[in-house]
Figure 1 (cartoon, helix red, strand yellow):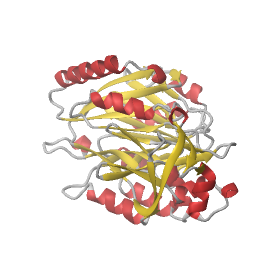
Figure 2: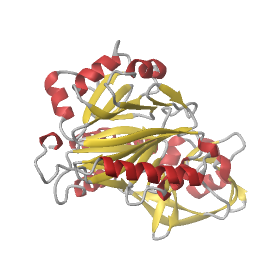
Figure 3: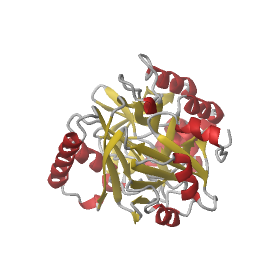
Figure 4: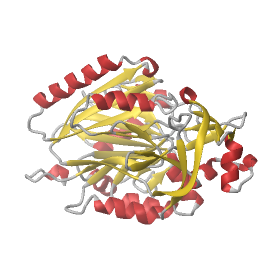
Length: 395
């Protein structure tokens, strides 16, 4: 299905489930009016706009002020969109949280490089407790985070927020700028921000499950980071050799030919406890250093990873979320490098079909947050299930 396609029957199908979902092409003459018509009358607790960097972000957010009643409005730029047809381009995806099913406390966090850990933790605890009191009829909960993907602060933000979350599971995604890595934007109620995050504390009548999937397996090829600049996510030396040259040598490649496709095809992982987590490489800088999407430190042992079949793994992973009963919808944050890999291995259509089949909506990211962790090359999200009691809007 064409991502720009509209029509009442298609829109009704797309809205089926707990969330209301709308989609318009970036060049639409009045995108907010089109989105509002597709979402329906509401009322909504929160509306999220995931906008291609090709959209006029400031105009979009200016027009959104007051367009959805008293709803909070979050918006961010993306590294790609996930919509009706799976992977989309040049689209604006809107997700509405109906007040009938959700209670939301939505707010912005500014100045990510100067957060007061204790103050922020206390604020999260107070807000979470207040939401619990205000919504006793909504027994499921989660937190959704959108964070500046060029702030270099995602690890710190996720760690601080997680310390105040208690049993509330947190997931989210780092905002994107396509494959340009130049400028990313966020907005809360029309106020455009950088070096910021948007956080929604959510309670729902629909049961939910926060999850994270990746299809990578560690190999026996290991390397040690021997010199790094953690604040800038730079690795300068691996195995006491120039980082890019040594990484290329281990792959049997020319260092001058390293690019985004290479990094997507040959990721590295670190061991944390009993599991491995991807530390994706963004690019090679002019000095031959490797720039990562996640925090990296001297002394860290990196392991090359190999791919399982991404399409099969994704289909099985999403199907497993419905082992007892199928979710009606999934809100997902999918790493840009997964999308790059899908294109490299001619799996874009297969992945898109799987995302569409499982009713996944969301955006491609520069990284994902899962609990206290900032991770890469995953699909991280929340699945919504119909409640046990009668609630037709969740079905």
